[in-house]
Image 1 (tube, helix red, strand yellow):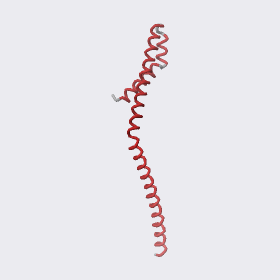
Image 2: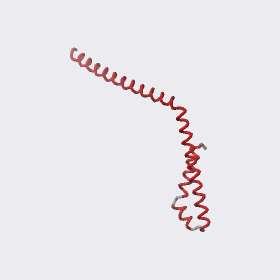
Image 3: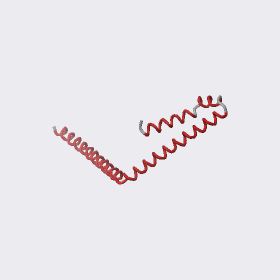
Image 4: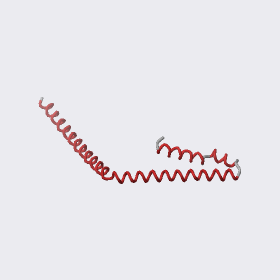
Length: 109
């Protein structure tokens, strides 16, 4: 199980613990059991939050370390997109010229 899958599982469990079925079940429990359940549910929320915070911190560190490469990659991609636009424009112009030549040839013959 990956870290992301584990975190998703914790989120699902946490959501289930707030579901209508759990709330109905909880009402039937003793005060002591309800209190224990609420404490455990809160603990799960705390752990999930810690995992999310740690994951974001790792992501931020990775982005910071790779920022220069990422910036270069984005700049290169933007240049390539501009080149594609130029190519597309050139092809459209070429198509128009071929269309005109075709009409001229048709008129001459």
